[in-house]
Amino acid sequence: MRTGSILFLVIFLWMSACDEVERTPVLADEYFPLVTGQFIIYNVDSTRILQNVETKFTYQLRVSTGKAFANGEGNTSYVIQREKRTDASKPWTPSGTWTARKSTKEAVISEGTTSYVKLKFPLAIGSTWDGNALNTKGGNEQCDDRECDRYEITETSPDVIVTQSNDPDEVLRKDIRVETYRKDIGLIYKASTVLEYCDSGDCFGTQFVKNGLVYKQEMVESGSL
Image (cartoon, rainbow, N blue to C red; front, top):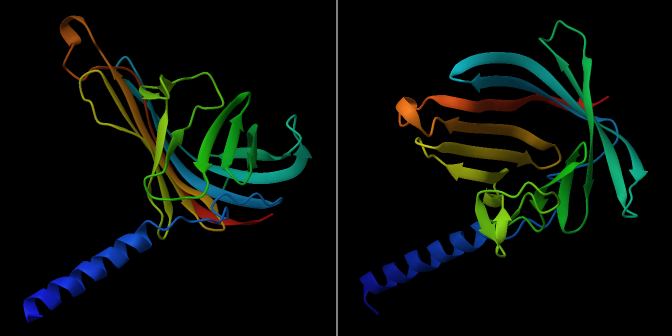
């Protein structure tokens, strides 16, 4: 065999091996741990836009896992306590209670009565699912002949990145959303830009934002209470 052919074969096998490693499913559910007493503190930057007028909010958010309880499906859910403060020198104030649960197939967050499928197991690059499968919100894409919010895992190493939407439209509606999960911690980063532009009259095509939200949530600390 010629040297060039051998070199090509070596490169091909190496690239195939790398691709196989990258696509190996992450079987563990440690990327969505539910342990009573665990907390994560985030820095949050949020900009609300209404009729092209921006209102900015900056604060810290602490999310802690409370006690487990039996849910209506006969499984176990956990109370998720949310607290806010304007900065590290201020006391925490309550900011609502969510619930969370996971199974061998999926991880779910319930914001009040609305549930979202945050992760599907096993975690593998290219894996997709309907984030709104457990609610009636629908979405902008089609899944199984119905409207859905199509989530996709786009990275699994070292962190799991879930692209919830990647529509950069600058004419009618921009929708870019992503979440990042870290092993043994959970959600460490969340960012979304959802903008609804003026779609008629003189403001059409000028990127005049009728309604929108630009949001970034980034972990700064984690631990146990």
